[in-house]
Length: 159
Image (tube, rainbow, N blue to C red; front, side):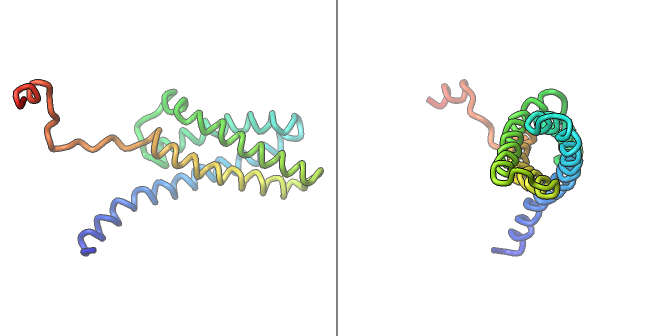
């Protein structure tokens, strides 16, 4: 690999790494707040209901942060929230499943153990969320080709 090619590779990889770091900071902050909210709500309502409320609210907040900070996108609004809505269901299923397994294995886990399981499950779901948001919701626009597209008249003339 030439030095020029190596520099080009580093430049194209850097924005993705930077976006992931920003994603982890924003998502991690929201995730820690969600974890605290889950503890508070979990004392007042069933765990699966509390997790549903926390997952929806934290996903809406995180999606706004990711749009503005992580991906530095000018896209926003309901379209982005609807496209990222898929991740709400996946995150909810993942975190609730992990907590239900924990409670099946340990009838009365400590708050620390419960939160460790919740935050770990959220982190794994977060990696999948990053991929979904990067590839689907905030995908960079396709590069414009310098090669003119074949048009119907050009095809007819060529024939």
